[in-house]
Length: 429
Image 1 (tube, one colour):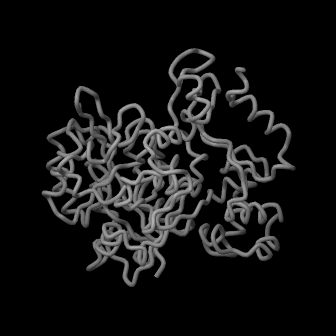
Image 2 (cartoon, helix red, strand yellow; image 1 turned 135 degrees about the vertical axis):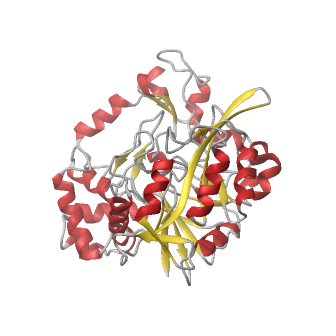
């Protein structure tokens, strides 16, 4: 059976998260998206742990859960969490986020008993802990060897293992003697497998992709995910496929084009300055407008640590597919103000009604069948995204990238707007 899993998201108890992020709402949109398995997120928060204990029912002998209010739901939940660790290493402050997977609610509660010594778990769904990365792994693994820890959004400038501002250059530097328990890295929205393949030291780690969603809307939930082929859907099967880096069971990841992420290129949002790594280096990573330090993008950070050329692919690599949220593709074609407007929902719902869920539209739906029920430009745009025949104006310093679907027919207004928003090297020469 094909299993599409998004294992990293947040509840309504995390900062800047929708109040509607509850089990019922997550399950509803996960089904529309085409997800099979989702993470609960935030199990360390006392109120959310109470909610999921009430709102989820354990599926016997699987280590997974289903919505208690809808026993027939096809959506399964894994008990997951993200925590932030702040500690000092060799005189430098390190702020690293980690994802924790756990086989049941009882073990999750035991993890909480240990973590509450290091911080207030009730302040935020993603708690901040005064503990080192290796100490975190040790505490979690002492509870149960079935738990799993991996670094979250590994390349974002802040709060990540390779972050330009508070990260490390090597996995071993971060996790030290606990590195033996690290089996995976989360790519994050601003990197993809080809970028990570450029570092030979990462070959032994499985690359996973998740949404880190703060909303259940389908243009957030499942925007990145993991695709498995399993005989039986269980926590153990998922965990083993990740730990073994088993391409027979772990087929590929779904990735947004990394240029679409908010930190792909180096730049400065306040001054609308965006630069490739080569351009940023010429300016010494200093903003040519305000003379302050630029926010170093993920592409530049990868370039600093890479020991392989662009385009290298390891022999044992698990595959990937670049996709973009269907709502945002429709929005771009229609020129709509946002993916939530009624005109976008109308097109979106027709496609879902015909093909079953969003992933089926994005991955499998034929052009001719789509063109019979929606505008032919929408159908063509979906195929272009599937084939990688679109251009992304790279995101930078917290600004999402911009999708350009039809080079020759893009409205001049949007092109001029993009030009005003982002400046590059040629604007200062």
